[in-house]
Amino acid sequence: MLTRHSIGVALTRIGVDWKIVGDPFSVRMMRAATAPLVEASASIVAGDVQSGLAALSRENLGSALSRGIAETATFAGAAMERLRARLPSSEIDETLARVGELQTAALETWNRHEARVSGFLRGVGVVSLRPPAENGAAVGRDACDASLLLSGLARTLVRDTSLAVPLERLAVAIAEWRDLVARCADALAADDGLRASYVRKRALRVLTAALVVGAVIAGAWIQLDRLASRRRVDAALAHPDPCAAEAIPARDLDRASDEGRRAHAARLVECEAARARAAEEAARRALAARVEAGCDALAARVESDGRLGPEDEGLLGPKAALARRVAAGALKPADLAITEADVEWGCPHQARRLWLAAARAAARSGEAWAKAERVSAALKTALLAEKIGLSETAETALSLRSDTIAKSALFGGDPATVATAKDLCEVQTTLSPHPAGWCKALLATLGRTAQPR
Picture 1 (cartoon, helix red, strand yellow):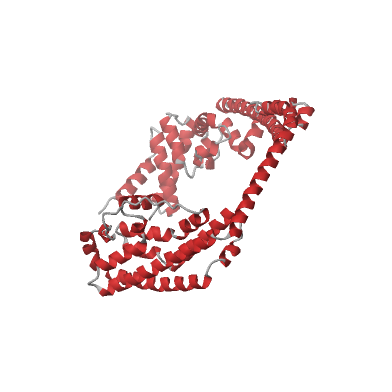
Picture 2 (cartoon, rainbow, N blue to C red; picture 1 turned 30 degrees about the vertical axis):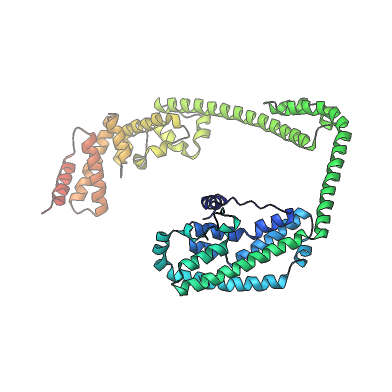
């Protein structure tokens, strides 16, 4: 992609110092309207002929001319329609149409033959396309003209008429377009009405500046009186504490700017919000302290087989029933399937104590083991890891329960009974030093069944 920098580098490499000097109207017109020609020249000099031809499209040239007219109109303070009326619109349209047709044909032809001639051009060198200086003269502005470069390229490829002819025709058309743009620029430069518009614009600017200076001087005295008040307001508003805005006197606030008054109102809102946040934070900390104290007390009561108080009921909510059974050491058979999630009672810092209290309660709950159907892996792991032994009642109940179900499973039990018996027998043989007889037989039978034949 070509940038202003790359174009400048390309022009410098071919020894051109491109400076447009002349009437300010023609300067702006030529600078904008010939931009595609400069871009095309830079591309061709850089060896990218395809991009150079693409830059010479009818759309690019027309847009550049319109941009030149617009910039000149803005500079002069005149309407674009007035400038367009001074230009030969019919000739512009005809020339653009002719350039567009020849550019399209040249680009299509180049695209078809580019691969064939690219190696040749690399050997010859694109800089050689510049026309030689005559009589030792320095290379001038025309050396970077797109039409001259295209003509030089056509001469280089003169033996390939399929390429040389379209390039030469386009070079002639581009030269005509360049001359037409120059005539348009000269026409605008010779327009006395355009110069008058520019003078009026400058005079209006001078008058506007004088009025502004007068207004500034007239209002300086008033502003000095307000300055001290506004500084006090700004100092109060810049204070780290937003509540400092409450101390601004009404007289200073009346002299504050609209922005200062809006900032004052915003700081008052911030003050109220800060106070509300402080109160909320204090309440949150107080609540957290109460909850933490309540959790400590709850854990202590659960661990010591105590009764739950009303404050515990409020903390536990619907989980209070399970907590009461844990505290009493009287779990139900279904409670043996509990996990740590079931004893998350809003006390994360006491979760471990409460879970171990639940495990110890399970070890004491003989009635639960007498009717047990399933024991969670988490409870079994806790009992083993913490070396929590079953009470005598619980151990006896588990042995009887597992032995009875194991016997039923061995003598024609359904799959559900076999699964329950297996689960309980595994728990019983793990937790009890005296494995039940039927459990050993069931586990041995299941182990043989699982072995591959």
